[in-house]
Length: 447
Image (cartoon, rainbow, N blue to C red; front, side, top):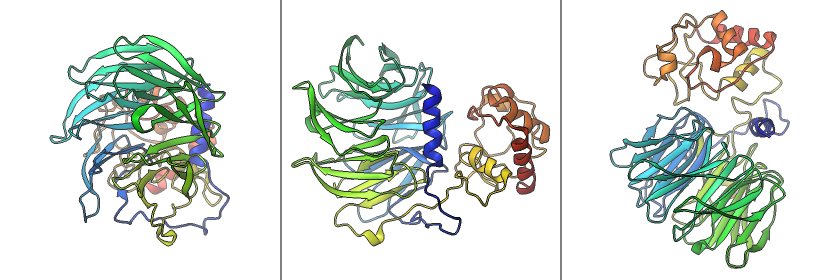
């Protein structure tokens, strides 16, 4: 199963139509309404209920807090880079006073918005965290993880309240009921499970789908659950009738993102097919569709005005889309190919760098907010010594000097063996020819 999931993840990064290098579509990353600042693709995005703030989480191991000021462009308030992996989930707590971030490192982080300081780091999960939910009274949070568990956390004491085990595969999504009494979770086993929020007790499986469930979203009044699946289905489960109450138009690829407007009048679905579809709840009509160029839609949310929506995918920024009145000529298209997508004009070494390194590293001085430090001048440099980058303890204590031999060992054996305890993703390059080509490319382009 995990091998299958890894294949899906890689497919999302490499998914693209066959275009030549000359057929690049230039993006609107300079659009002042976009959320620009991350150094890697954005995986998580949420806009506060009052529409005044936004949170984004990225593959660059960081989260960003944004502010919307009427009559002005979005303002970046702060970047939070304490994570040891990609940030997959972000959620506000209360009236924007605190917020939670979580991701590949398996931890949850509770932050204070005003001081921008870390309050608690919650440890316990043994796999990446994909989803976080906060109770209506802001007393506790729930997290869904690929370690097949859901955990409940006290937002005042910083303690774990309960461990919920019952899924037969990675858990992707979690919700808390409007009265705070129940937790609902879903994952790759295709089931939606209902739990007692106070005791963590398994109550029952309320629904079984034939395919894995990726995402869930509450509809108004929290009596219906909107969910999206691996095979592209978009459906609504009614908690009152205990049945599927609506089957919407499916996506051609997995559904990866769902959103509900602040006024409760609209919902949206986004998928691996790059399509965003907006629905009007009053009559279930499709009011708009947007085809995001060359890649999946990983995250999205409506703004304060339900005619506006932000979405994110393979780009290093979140895109602003004015749904209505729609001006197609103003809508941005993403840049193709991205730095991590291969195309025929690349040399073997450049292709390895694009696919294995460019998500986290740049070749130019400065880290550009990437997950890893700049590789400029890396040959002959002692590991963990580049100023301005927050290294993990594993690299700070390392005696490694980067050269042809140590870089070859890094990709031949894997970071878990060469730099244990570091933030570097677990990846290897098995073929020596490809490792040699990467090293040659780095020697030529990091001087």
